[in-house]
Image 1 (cartoon, rainbow, N blue to C red):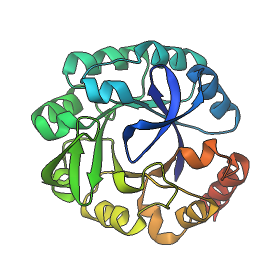
Image 2: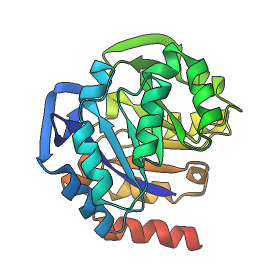
Image 3: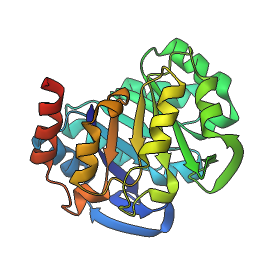
Length: 245
């Protein structure tokens, strides 16, 4: 079970949104590269990065900040936000990303996702961001009629490395992970699922160690980490201990 610290980028800064609202952003750092290095020094093994401006614009906006992060840490990084073409995917992977996250394009052009998985094995993740049970796209600005489970099943057998499932209604408001829905999704597919949205306290960390949660690949943490609601050393030690049992 991996605990992924999140760096969400808006105008070059590390921020956290509430329910995906770009007008409700709290800035935590003006130096994303230093934040990435700090997470590595704290013992985290992965980094989850989102180009928020890019998700709305459909192209990379915070590329300079992402490249600085790549230079600052040796941890593997997964990046989402505005990546919507094979050329864009290849460009980022060549720069050193471990994997890219495809969200809007997974809804609009699932064939591109399958082709990307063929060209870049184990380096393509799909981001499924749901409002209610329906998938949202374009930086969560639009909600489709597509069910989250239906979208996940479309990529069964395609070679997707992971699905990042975000409950938009819980994201950034510290209400706790939507464990029921996330685990139900994970049971529907063989693709590893990463939970996102709402991690609030050490109780969620403890929930990660329960047997039924072992089906998940990991959980993303943002505001709870930045606000000091969870202690990195304590959280990572609990997960390590559970792994050893």
